Image (cartoon, rainbow, N blue to C red; front, side, top):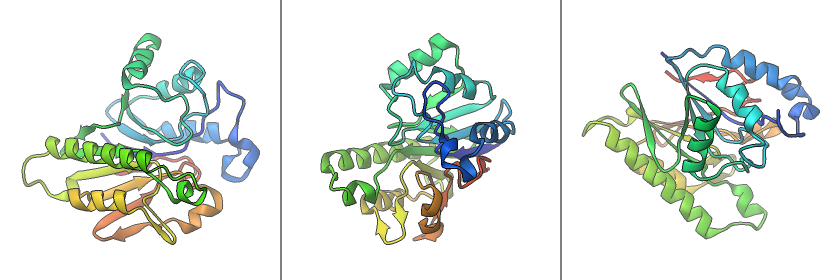
Length: 236
């Protein structure tokens, strides 16, 4: 029984947007993902931290989910900024049930237990949204509210007085980056006493500007697929 995490698979088995064109770590990336996910067993859990598929809707994402469903274990899905297929939790659950795709769970405004830990998460927010002049305070506050709801749900899964090391957070956007800190997200992680935060979104040269390690008592870890060479990071 193991817990893994990885983000940014950018699958496009049902859409014409393969990432191989970017070269480097992305060459043959679907085969790399398959080799990476081959470590999973039926008792394992993997958190997929956003940008799962380039599909524009669930039907277009069918081949991508069929590919992921071919691997055993529980798969918790976090929304990314390119997950245009994402819709309501009810519609996604119905899609998975109708297609016979077992093991998928939506990590969104909620939390899941893993042994004696609580797994929390949301998409988050990033400086790109500010630098491009697209900052939307309403959307930002909604993401903070979603994270707070998830952290509260996570705390509710733990016994009273459980140490922060039992609370794990999974985001798509990095809450910390060279020269940037998303106060709303970081402050929530601090307030609820999360022990670790895993995030994706960063690719290529941006890996060098990632903030990893301890920051104010929380361990931050980058888990973008190309950063990991598509080998899921084992957490527990």
